[in-house]
Figure 1 (cartoon, rainbow, N blue to C red):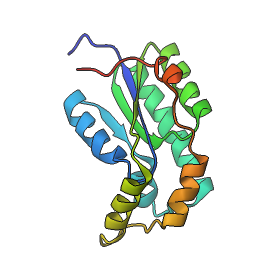
Figure 2 (figure 1 turned 135 degrees about the horizontal axis):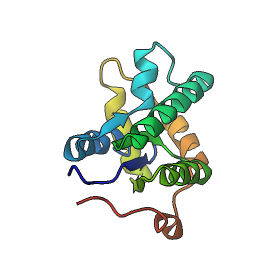
Figure 3 (figure 1 turned 120 degrees about the vertical axis):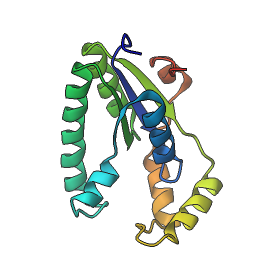
Figure 4 (figure 1 turned 90 degrees about the vertical axis):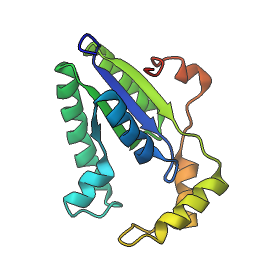
Length: 157
């Protein structure tokens, strides 16, 4: 794998879709660097719902990801990527750095998201996400279209 190109993997989906599970598996399989804003926010003592802190952390992680890509690494960002402009920005910039770019879209039915979130809410120390907040997230989510998905590189085997 020493001759592989740098690669950016964007993990896209709503809360409860399995982004972290997929990202951790890919981290092992691809010998990648995984960057998770939620983990950084929690480690730094920020409220996960603090929009200003999230914005600063995500910007810093994106700068770090670009540095890693420029050095030839495989980087996984599990920001959720709810909006197409953000996905476009990351794809275009990573390609300018010579990286392949992959989008892992985790599409999960709302009933299953609600079930998973309810289970996660029972875990000690978890950040409770209500059904109402999950539905609000869904209303803000712009799912990738087939045409958009075609703009990305296929997943590595």
